[in-house]
Image 1 (cartoon, rainbow, N blue to C red):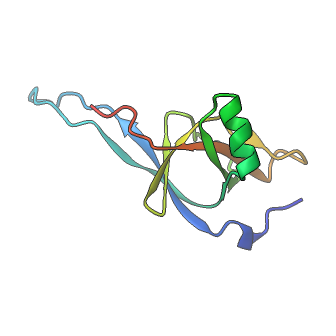
Image 2 (cartoon, one colour; image 1 turned 135 degrees about the vertical axis):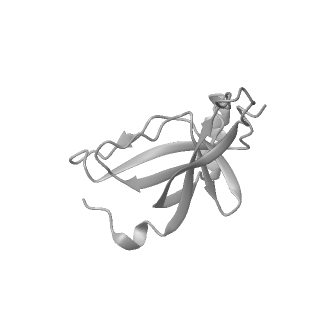
Length: 118
C-alpha cells in the first residue's frame, strides 16, 4: 500500500543537536540545534484512548510522524521534530511499513523537548 502524496501534507523540520567544542584558536563554540532535514510528513496526535494507554504504560508519546521511506535515512532518537512551532522528541527508532518495508517509516513523538540544552 503506497503512501498517497496528499497524506504527507505537513512540512516538518528535523533537527540534530550539535555539541559545541573549541575552534582552532581555542575559543568555545556554542552548542545548538541545527537543521538536519526538512521533509513532508503526516503528524497524527494520539487519540484520547491512545494517550490514556500511553500514560498507563508511563510513556510520554503524544503523536506519530509518518515519512516516506528513504534509503540510508538516519533519523534517530537523538533528534527532534519542529512542526507548527511545536517541538517533539523522537521517542522510537523508525518502524517500517508492514507491506514491503520500503514505503514509509513511522516514528513515535513526545512533546516538550529541551533535552541537551546547556
